Image 1 (cartoon, rainbow, N blue to C red):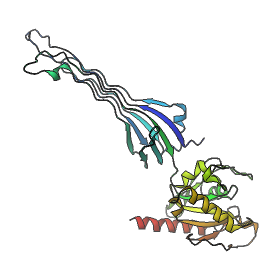
Image 2: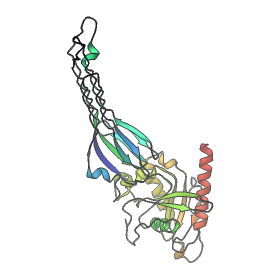
Image 3: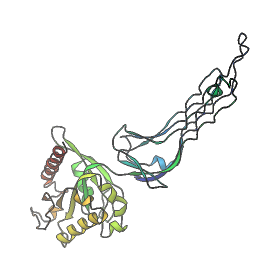
Image 4: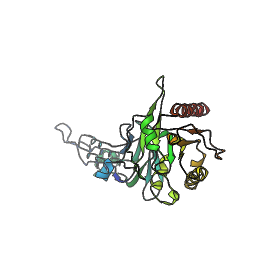
Length: 330
């Protein structure tokens, strides 16, 4: 099951309270205060974990709390600090405060950490309040409360190439042929109900990641079909490939509709480099490249995933474009 949006309630640990204590030793009858400080409460930390691909674990458990700090003790002993609690999430997870909408941070890579709730400090013991004129203080401080908040985790897939198209445009079939991914494939709309990732292996250990984004229909940016759920995943792709079946009645209209949905959802998303890929070339039995107006596309290609036609060309074109983008970034 692919889970990409969850609500999580987190609470950092409360600090331990300070201690009121006085020395009682055989040869120190006038022993002074020796109450120690309380320990710090544990933090709540979100950490990137590359082995994860969904936020499924957070659907089984909504509340996460770090350990509280221990109270201070006599002989100026500080209480033990509470253990931090680590929440593992897949890279590509955006963290927001559910109540304010504030963006807390974003996990991009494995091992990256963000502290989302700070543990409370420990309270001072009575030894802290001793002065020359106040030699037997009985004051102590309670521990500070840890931060508690409601967070929203949103997973956005990170991929080099995003396959975009109408239902049954051939996205899943193409992904299954060029990678080891095995998405569900059938001859009815919305076969793909969740994004699929596949690693494409070229020669010389060159690889890149392709994402099969569930079908986008007209009005997807308004919540129609499945598109609105998955349009956000396209934001993380470096290149978009618009797939149009060669047997479509109007190639230009379909291309314009797909581009329009992307632009309606996000003008920034529309700026991502893209190409046009005509699929199901095997239906014609010969190579054919339809003429459409796509001035912003860096290339137009015809392929047949089932017939293994044109695949080397499209993979080479994607790799070449990715290298250009990498060099441009430096």
